[in-house]
Length: 359
Ligand SMILES: NC(=O)c1ccc[n+]([C@@H]2O[C@H](COP(=O)([O-])OP(=O)(O)OC[C@H]3O[C@@H](n4cnc5c(N)ncnc54)[C@H](O)[C@@H]3O)[C@@H](O)[C@H]2O)c1
Ligand SMILES: [Zn+2]
Image (cartoon, rainbow, N blue to C red; front, top):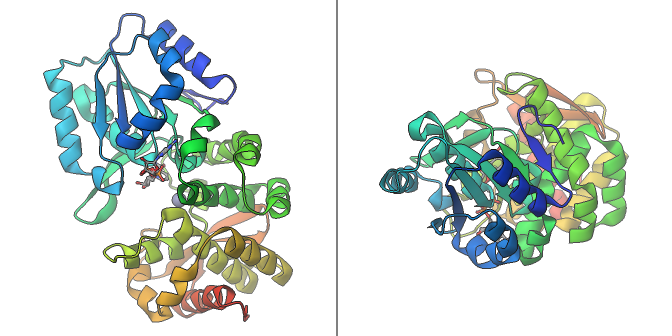
């Protein structure tokens, strides 16, 4: 798949990766950024290809998890790069989930004004979303992705075999972004998902290329996120508010889980404001409630969302802005929505989870 300045490769991707590196970086040193889990589970699977690429033995190994997307880790990596005298002609392979590609991409983009990066996504979220689109960054002072940059990789090589070791909950969480892609731009894929119910690795492997193509299309049309790319925020307005509310709690809510709840809210608002038929809201809500464990929405009160919603980056001044779907497979962005309706949509998702779907 052509992503403008780079390719996203799905077929024979690991052979292609080795060929690409050997052809484009014949005299460069090659380094890997991975986390403890991808080091343990993913690197052995591609040992043969790493051998063909003569990757330096140096692997930058970070602790798994969102806490690693920090300035502390970035600083540590810049120090490592400097000690190893990594030069601008060298290449970094990010082998991991979105944390590795966001952090690795950020560190590499700023080091000596940019050293080349290749993404080898290993989580479903990274395959379907994070490894494509050029956004890199770290969190700062409890603010997500507060420091960052637009910087494209030189290639993305997707191997869904990695998904076999990804924990189920992470797998399902990544699937939320694929559901999002279908709901905003591909009714055919959406219908397949409804038929499928809970996703399997085989099913995901089949539909992943067209799902990533949807993200790529919006990114190509609007690389800097000023217009149509915003449709990729479907479900993310309430989703982010939920993530913020659970940030410092003992309950872990994964990004895709929060977005799944957010998509039910956005479907409800789409029914009221954009004419999405009620039957579609029912189908969307039932599928999401079946695939995801959304129990956490019942632990919040709708009013709790008011504050984080007011601070949503997508707002225009104080007015809430949603992405809505007038029909499945079609999206409109920058739609003004009242706080009252946004909070009502949260009560709707609570009713879905309680098994009594109340419109
Ligand atoms: N740049 C973007 O456009 C973009 C888009 C969406 C999300 N993101 C970012 O991505 C991050 C989330 O990504 P994520 O969900 O991949 O998180 P992650 O990188 O933390 O991976 C999730 C967990 O799965 C483990 N893991 C990954 N692949 C594995 C495998 N094949 N086998 C076993 N374990 C594996 C990881 O070690 C980690 O514990 C967030 O920080 C988010 O902000 C960025
Ligand atoms: Zn997302």
